[in-house]
Length: 626
Image 1 (cartoon, rainbow, N blue to C red):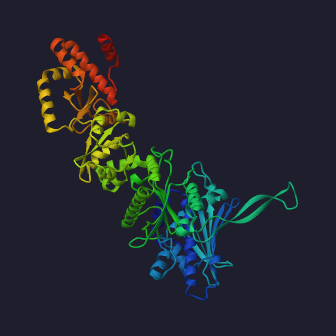
Image 2: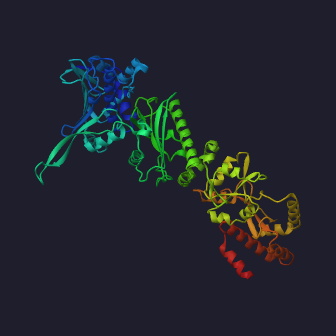
Image 3: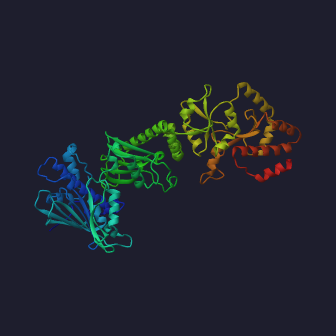
């Protein structure tokens, strides 16, 4: 055989491919199987126009043959094979792709998707093999050729004996080391797993002779080794079949097995897109939140395939964070892959696919909201927080996309409503959307301000998730209606006359109210109000930060005494007997007035769900007054 050198700066390039481009050694098998599939594709394409090619499509195959004793793994195909010139051109020049040339030569006439385009996938085999032998015979030729190499030093090429057309690649697997166990690539179970993971949807059968123990015929307790030809791949992707051909059970089975979920999905979404970029997607919305969904261990993303070959197991760029709960697969032959077929160019095609998927998911959720309300509400219980975070994140960049998918509990029978439904049910004179925040629905409903707003016939949204109020602040408005926190000091539903009368009372009691403020020391103001009905006091807030928002910020990791604080106001019911008592104490016993002020502040904290800083002081004050 003739000894030759690679036609590139081999040592540097080959070292880079083996040590840098590929991040997982197991990728080599995907690359070699994909190349074998390409070779069969080329022969099949030729058979469409060349009557001399006499082979049935059903007879094509790819075979894997591990030999533990010889430490070899052989990949065989009955594809087009290579002539001496093609062998020299394709394997003698690193980064030379016969598939790429074939695609360029045939253009749009080709009815076959060619997977490999860059010609370096073959060399990934040197990650696991110390030597590679390629025996090949072009279909229709009588002479076969062999190519051998130990790596970057060069290769040998010459004639050989080969009975049938096609290509046979023999990998001489490296010896195990302390850090690497190369023997795993000779294990039948491991090979089967890699085929299922990366090449399950190659359109031709990938076969392997497997051995097993079976009961010897005619005996009851004697066993023998049996070798059988097993097809390792399923070949036809579920997403390539039309939706009408697939049963619900098949979709459910595919989802639970592939994504390791015990429950069937809440929604199956199929999508086929033709145009600037063509792709097929099969998406699933889980019915339950994955146990690790809100942990750093959860990896969002869709499985990405190129013509049935898995490129990435978790392509996060295909899903926005707020739809990160969606599982599924995307298959496109139009993606621009880099030379390793493992990494993606972050180009326009990928962005177009991601945008189309986002639009499709949103559309399907809107349909579910309109047509399957109960089902959507259950789904929202699982993933609604993620949608709300989507509104809040990125400075509200996605708020218009998500605002009509949000649900909030309402004071009207505590049912869930959309913002659109709330606005449609607003009273004619109502200018704002009212809401109140709290840890539970019951706690919110007990707030004096909520009772006052409901008394006037207005609906109130109950916000129980930490992100709720932040999301509404980012939204700013909905359909021209602003959002108003009913516990904010700025909210006043009184008439102008009532406001003027109340101001007069507060002005007259300014000295007393300031004395109470100083006694409490934790509020920005103390003032009278007429909107509390039977409640004696309440807490309200001034400015952008509410009491509930302050509580949430204090619970966040890393929060300290310097965390933002709400500007809190103690409001006293002017129509409650306690008001008259306070006026009397201010005139006769300012020390006792101070004690009353502290007690009333603590009572307001209890009503508002705010922790009392010094319970011991409160119990002492109450005991003294008793």
